Length: 193
Image 1 (cartoon, rainbow, N blue to C red):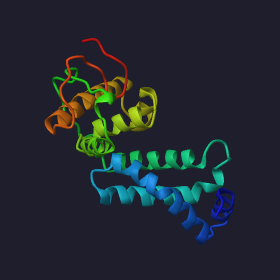
Image 2 (image 1 turned 30 degrees about the vertical axis):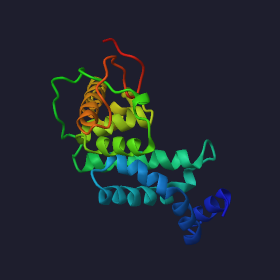
Image 3 (image 1 turned 60 degrees about the vertical axis):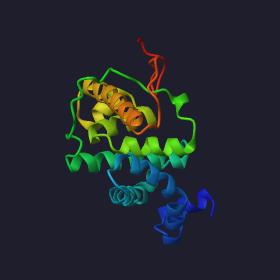
Image 4 (image 1 turned 30 degrees about the horizontal axis):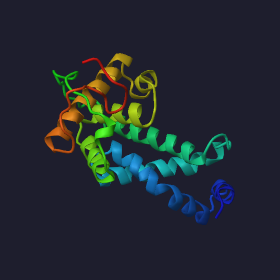
């Protein structure tokens, strides 16, 4: 089924079109949910709630940009709303050595290790994991994140810095990466060091 037919059908609440849309986009959107959730069950719940919103808001899609991007934004906002509703975002950990070490993308050489990195990200405290996902992976600014999560912009920046440091420690401990002499960031350029 073409994207246009799926859209037309979904606007008319056609179950076949909704199923086609879900089948096409749900595997990638589950990956998005999985990064925010603590476990697969929570991710699947986020996905289901997100697609309910997609289907109820599909008439608002204006063919401006990719349909997948529009769906992704709804899924991300659904994940954030679920975390906020459950007050899970407020759970955070203070890391004294937040600026200590950083990870470099080039030192994650394989797809298998990339999967391990995602698993390690999921072990971060919810606040760290959420900000890391929103900033480094989804591309939101700290100002946008602050608005979404009802936190200060400086809190978003600090959570991101702490998340990167904690993630590197986990990756080193699990021997996914090795500690480097030259400090660089997993999601950015060389930092002073």
